[in-house]
Length: 126
Image 1: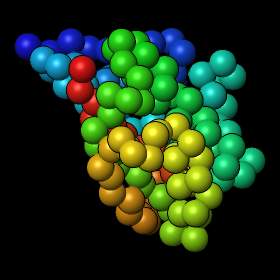
Image 2 (image 1 turned 135 degrees about the vertical axis):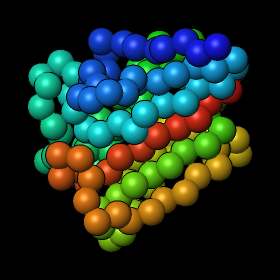
Image 3 (image 1 turned 60 degrees about the vertical axis):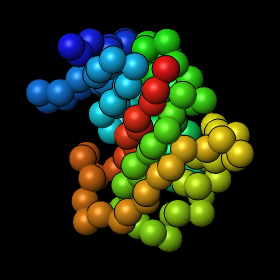
């Protein structure tokens, strides 16, 4: 059985998918990009602000499922330029306790939706 998780505090899906799906105690999130849900505009001023918006969006999706970043066990980070890794990692790391941080992979890709620079998805367990 699966439960669809949605919140108006994060960007609405722009295709045939949901913000997250809860199956048992496991939450699978869709990738988040830097849409500001209040303005419906992308935050692309710089990679730091862009990554912060992605993480804030993910925070709201987790909250809608009754979870926090402490519940996250795995993340996937997709970036358009590996030269941005350091800045992305600094922002990303500020949302986790390093001692209990999740497993993760970070990969550079040719192109991301809406030509953004970073997209992040997560798996969390209650």
